Image (cartoon, rainbow, N blue to C red; front, top):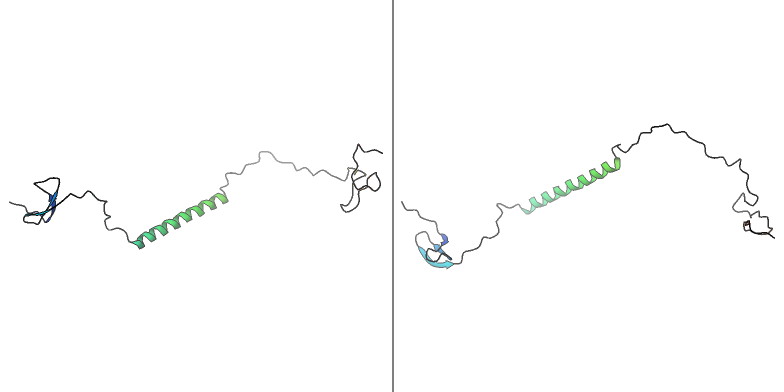
Length: 130
């Protein structure tokens, strides 16, 4: 039983480094160098619209993840609360009414300095004597 090959390029039986055209019944005189393996062709590649939808969906998911993470970090989860182990005692601020004011201080920032030296607007220094 003989088997018939379909027409196409096959290794040349007389020159194995070349390909020869088989027309389905006989070899022709057409020869060529064998083609190297080319890049694989995608089987039914995705359309441009499908790629755009996939990229848009990926972008939305990424943005949602970033926003959710930022919200969770800003809100906190309560782990950073430290329990007080001892009661705190509130102390009143120190009173300023009991302290005497020096003679050279002023009651108002707009008034002149009451310095021991008449007419001087500078505050006296301890080393200044007349």
